[in-house]
Length: 572
Ligand code: ARG
Image (tube, rainbow, N blue to C red):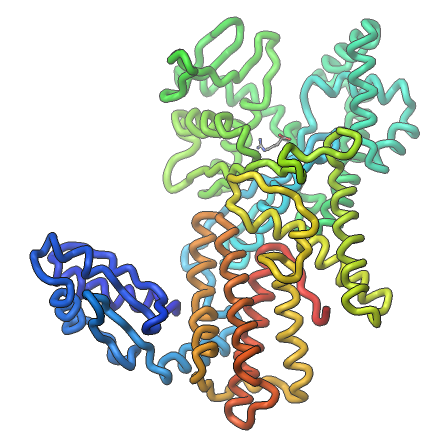
């Protein structure tokens, strides 16, 4: 178990007894001892006792003998704790013997729906969809590894009035030509052409409107053309997912159209519950607590003036299905922050309707924008939004070139494999390493640097653990006695023991930058250990122990990176 946590568990009852009320001992790593608690200092005034006296009283009560070599009061009233070498070695050995690296499968599995990616048919995926796809996939991997039943939902934008114009344009082009344009990923070209005709040509506009009516009325020919658009776009999105190395598959598409036949019932039920009001011709819900700048209540439009249903109604129907029919108790929506209010209102209305009640809860995992080096929204040189495939291809090209310069002896296939793992890994890591809600700047130099908080740095650290193991010439002995003496060795051990805590914390908060930060710290500790503690040149028991630590570090890095969706390679 994580030592900070273990010590916290041991100190809390002692502090609480001494202070006669709950106290968090705030245990931290310390340069003076292994760990330190300074909680006594903050209690002094309230208890009217000196901090040193309080610290001593806590130590008199706390049970620490089995974990600590020394536990003493120091300075103005710190509690300094030094972990017993034998106890530490025992914990590391137990970790090494555990396939799951100290992270048990959850005792309370739940059904979690992760709604992510969600691109729109016949429209290019943009960097916002990239972020959603990367973050959502990390959520899926993490929760799945912990033993939850995870349902991936790709809420594809495949429905609504724009399809009238898209189908009319498809008919103008001819099916073969349209399919060709869409499958090569010229989605924006297709969309723009339809849009300009719609804006300029009244006859086209008429045909587009008739197509909307026909589509909604279930006209077979129109439906067939619509399906063609959807399928070609899906095929293209799947190539992007493959390049991006995410777990989304064809079976995960559950587009807006899938809820079409439920919208009437959803709105009918909301109406029966008395939650709907007519407002300026539209049918709206006014969930309490949402007001505009002037204080007037904000509407969530569930049916538009023309009788059509829109985005909010679809999300209400989808939510109801997820809790009601899929039995999900946790709903995650990985969608950009501009949609924050939309989701807050949808969740509020679903709560009023009884479709979202404890233990079921919904979380909007909002995220910021991707910025170009100029600090503005990322654009291509010609000013359009950047095409996702172009970005990913560039990442792989750059990383492959880098791998070749680093190691000119690499053969073609190895260079390609490394280039892919590092290029795609760098893009994903750049996305996950900063607080999700912040914007981040896409900066190739920084993302691909071998010496920063980057994917290549971590991948390199992993490859190094592998190379040490290979050069050892003997298999790692899983039962080797763990010997921890050097400070760098102990620091590495403490870090390794912290994996489980971070994983559980991130499963709760979905703040993947915490996991990224942990892996970076672990890689840094390993690097210091490797510099100061000879592994291959050590002898006997010490050598076996250090090889075990090296191997355990490698396994932890690989598992952590896997959870972030990042591949490792055996050599770099
Ligand atoms: N298609 C939407 C967009 O591009 C994202 C869908 C998000 N998911 C949802 N359930 N609304 O903005």
